Image (cartoon, rainbow, N blue to C red; front, top):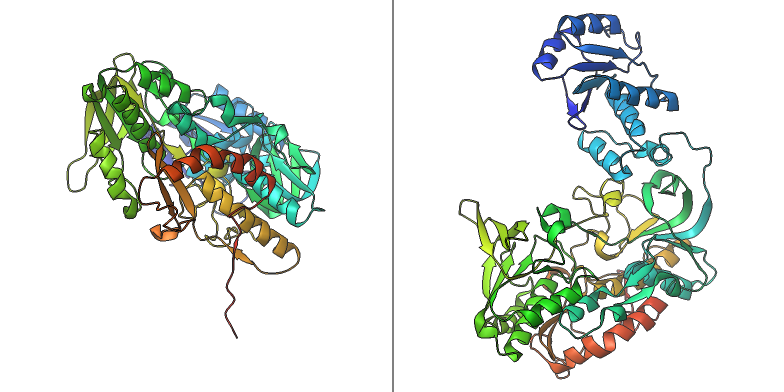
Length: 559
């Protein structure tokens, strides 16, 4: 007997027999639902036989037969009513369990988010993407097949989405292109480190989404519920359907604040802050200015995260401010890193270590933040160093800058587009999906082994645009992405270590070393970060002007 748990209230399974009833009783089940019509299989016990054995064991039984492949809206309603009426936990079964999982999915469509439903059934071994439209439609069969169609549909209106839309329109102005994104505001997220360091004002890092959508591109202001790649369709909240010839997926990633116990309740108060949120970055600077003595913690979760240098950027700028204010000697700076190295590309570590020494910061590797008690100002870390027993430590703080755990968005993680870890599965050179030829992805959501930075998206967007235009004309990929990413490490106010690297940690400097040596702190890199990169972002990258971002051409072997 194979039991596939959906949640604490419901488990589904393939066909059971009367011999299974005692084991189900012992496992704690109190009710059984049969979703398989009698007579479907020659060796199948009737529901009356199962019911008699169930009643003898003190279990309740409900017979709700559904023909294979013919789950009606009324069936789902009846299943939901049975779950409410029967004592739980409940076991529901059919031939394989799929019908029972489908009935549950449709019955919960008005009370649970789509991603929760798809995630729970997927974990139990059932793929419900085939009924995603019905789930989005409140469990009822949609009557419309599509509300709009475009040559290219782009999911996500962040750095990657707007840039690739602009690059596509620059290459092929006649393309019908749509961006799907529910947000009203578009943020220049690389600027939040500077807000937390007192250099930028928060309002300078935000513009209205409508002002940035490229001319001629349709903006569909909605959230995506699910994907139907076999039908070239994107399902929106409310069950509207958008069809596409080519799809680009770039919704960014999810900051999973809830993964750390107590964090959400204390963010923005009790000395707990994060430059990873627009509304909290100013609080970082407020805390830095007001702290005269005590302990300051800076945390970094397990990879992958966007801009892996951001947690230590906050530490360096804070340390520099305390040094300038003459209070650094009274402050205990602790960097709590879930990983085992300061920075993943070793060429930049010597320069960074000089600043670790300057600010007298203690590096605590393999320390992962798992809980925060804001009012008590205590943080709990899981310590998992190699060759040692796992343990936990509690650390008091006066200020703590938190970098949250990060995952793929829920609607991506449970979709057919995702790999086993939940990220969009692409070829790391062409950025084309590994299974669906008319889908591409870029930015933080895809699984290529590059740094998740805005600079990476700046290089990826032209590559994707080039390859889509080539595909539209029947050609193979013409451009490839080399893994380029950039992380301007703000080691002090006025100086930056400009880390630029590609796949495998290969250095990818944009300038000759006599102009700017990225492995050393420089004022030129600071000028680039403070004065040049914001206008390049707003006025070039998002406008399809590919300054220093021309895609690398695929090398064709000679015959």
